[in-house]
Length: 103
Image (cartoon, rainbow, N blue to C red; front, side, top):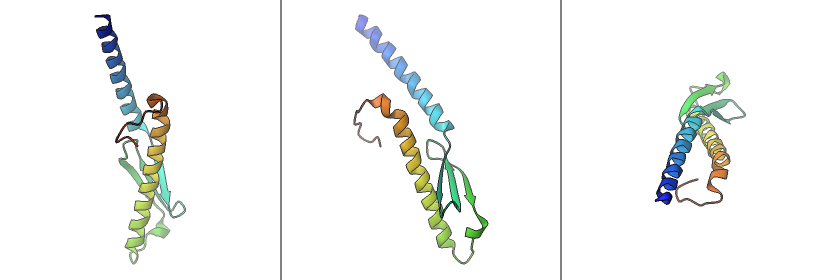
């Protein structure tokens, strides 16, 4: 029965690690940008948009499509940076494991 106790400890440790990682990703702040920094988007580690910054020069009522494209590009930039930050943070944990659906 000694093996069962080891498994319980391992599961408890894994749960604690998961909770810590969830807290850390929620606290992350990653900025994506587009248009040479004229549009910025701040994301947390779960890719929730926390803030959008717009340079007044990029706001043109006659070219809303360009503004939409810049916002999307800034989000995609931030999203890629979140993925990279999470891969760096989790890289040591997986020790090279390829888990389907992860990154």
